[in-house]
Image (cartoon, rainbow, N blue to C red; front, side, top):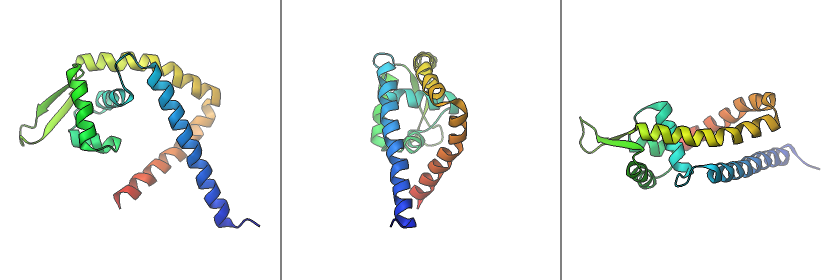
Length: 151
């Protein structure tokens, strides 16, 4: 006989197993489609900066749940490619701010035009209504995981 706790554990394992596999497959498919030289982390940072404006390296690291060192490495590659501008904080010289450059906007837009059809195809194959209904659940799950990380 299966008790409620076992069924709950199975539900959690099934949910996260599906999320992990879907994440891996989506990342792999998108990464292969990105323009030569662009990594998924580069696209993600450019996309966030294009939508959210200037950020500090620490804010970017927190947004992607990576170390400051990893984010510094990504920012360095994007700066070298001319996709971001890094400037000192005028009030605190120890801090920096990162913004997307016009070349970065073009690179982000070019990458987005390549991956958008892949994402649309996946959504259409599953069904737009199913995806629309799943989004609130996925957002709630993300928020719960963020809240747990703060404790």
